[in-house]
Image (cartoon, rainbow, N blue to C red; front, side):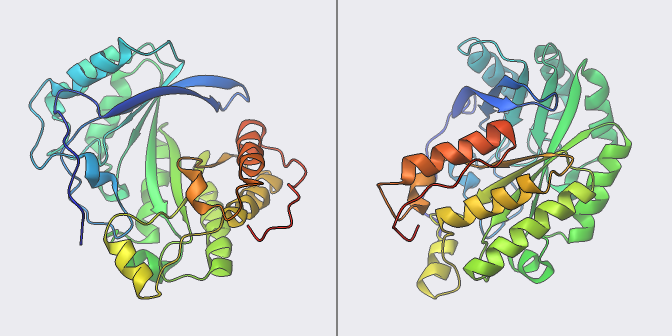
Length: 301
């Protein structure tokens, strides 16, 4: 059901940028985000479209460091860095382990190094070794997706909620920060259920020790979700639902930063008149972790 992959170069990141993000200290600070070209993730999650910019084979030794150098030579300075590889940093068939020390040395001046990894692939020896290579803080982003056990099973994530909780708590116990990805309205949930379970999933992630949670609207476009959309088992969430989830979580004053993912947000809007105001409002909540006045519009966004 998948459309074709995009053509990518194993020695170049497929994207890179610097943007401000609210830091744990409460300040807006620049974060460099590198989207590294890497081998396709071995998991086949139903909602994923990250495979579109991946390779079929493992990258050669040194290629990831070359990608990092290429991006950082072209980006302005930043205090934190995300090394996202469309998969799992500690997958032995992804980023070669022999490159870990050199990668850590290259990004050693950053206060926080954020990588992504599947909860079942948080290989403890590799995670501890990479943590010890770094002068700053290691943060690992885990995909919980949803705390709804039946939906999580049907997403083919190949993990349970307990797997996520166990991984998060182990990381926190070993002084590795945790960031969590939560989906808003994955397949098989109604709009109201999607809102409820997104908030419940954020709560579970915070209880497990995550100090940063990103709520991501579930997007079609990977083939399988489009198939579910045609058969009435999936609908993308409304923009207003993302607002409601972020409002509810920020108002709870969790001991964590809660962000709404704003990438390609316009596809979830039903009104051109109020879209930019709503996007700006979400961005303000991301930056301040406060709830500003609602946007008024006579549409049904």
